[in-house]
Structure formats: C-alpha cells, structure tokens
Length: 178
Image 1: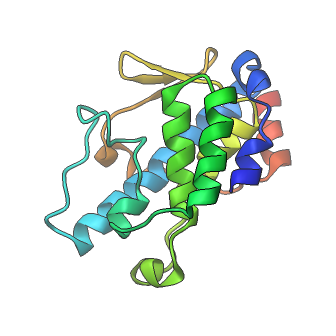
Image 2: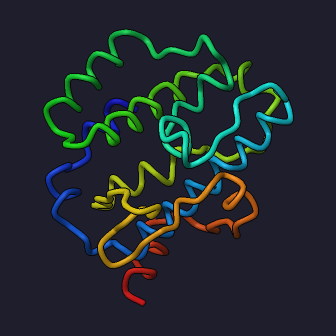
C-alpha cells in the first residue's frame, strides 16, 4: 500500500482535472462502499457510533479499519514511511488522513474480515481517484472536482446507490470522454 500511494504523482493530482467525471463517479462508489460497511458494522455492533456529515472526523473520511478491529494498526515501518512521504508530497490533511486509513485497512487480518464476506474494498475507489489526478475539496456539503460535484450527505444517502460496475481504467477513461 505504501508503494502504491508513494507512486501517485501528487502534483498532477493537484493540478489536473481531466478525469473529473470518472473521479466524481469513483467518489460516489467510495461513499457507497463506506456506507455499506457502516450499515454492516452497525448490524454487527449495534452500539457503534452513528456516522453523519456533522461528525466530520468520521463520515466519510475516517479510519474504517478501527471499527472492524479496534486494535488494527499497520506495522510501524510502513506507517512511518507513508507519514514521511505524505508530509512531503500531499498538501491536504484530508489526503493524509485517508491514505493512512487505507494503510490501516490493508493491515487488517483475514480473521478480522471473516464476518464480512463479500463486502467490497472501501478504499479502492478513493485510491483510484488519487491515482487518476483526482484533486478534490469539500465545500458546502459537496465534494468538488471543479467540473463535477458529489453531494456529501450522510451514509444513509449512499448505502442504496447503484454500484459502479467496473473500476477498469479504460471504462473510467470512456466516462471522461463522454
């Protein structure tokens, strides 16, 4: 995961907007996947905290792995390497927080995920946003990609959304050309 994140050209991500349509669609998919995980976690752990947009440290950009397995931590060496890389290359605290959350997610053991068979990787669409020059910011309840916006809303707003059928680069490029 550290290698993947370190390979992202963050300068291009901050300056390029040619993938705005696909980035917005990938963000919707990230929100849908996070919402599905929140729903399933709340079924498994009814006392789990409620996630909503007012709790900005939680929904939608939070460390989901800690809710699956509270003791989840990446190994110290990759965590330090990622932290050093992000402090030099990623300009936004939100970017750093989400990349660290993706690293923690990648550190989950199969045993931790055993009760959640069939649920999608929640961070794959977000990592693709970053890899495809998907600079974004949050403003007035929207995730903004300059040419496209995604309503932030609550997790309940996204849980029943239509899934993105393909994360394939060619399919995403076709969205941007349409």
